Image (tube, rainbow, N blue to C red; front, side):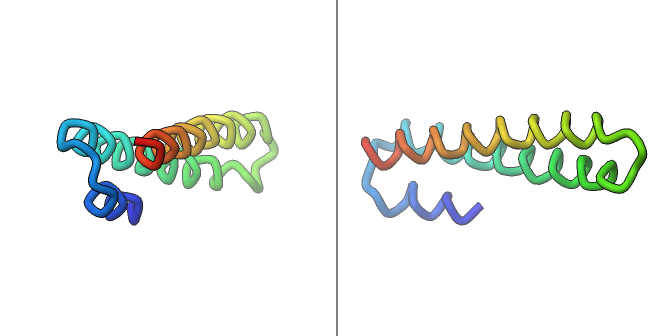
Length: 74
């Protein structure tokens, strides 16, 4: 969530900043939530659920980096 501060500092247009803020919040929260859910399956016998939630969390992580790249290059 600290990436929100970046949208205030870099001086990008307000429309892009607002869109980036929402994407940071939603993707960041979903990344954390799915990571925590996957953590419960870490010690379970069924490691497939752990791997699934790990992959979902990584997708949101990559999306956060993509939005960060867009903000920095703008």
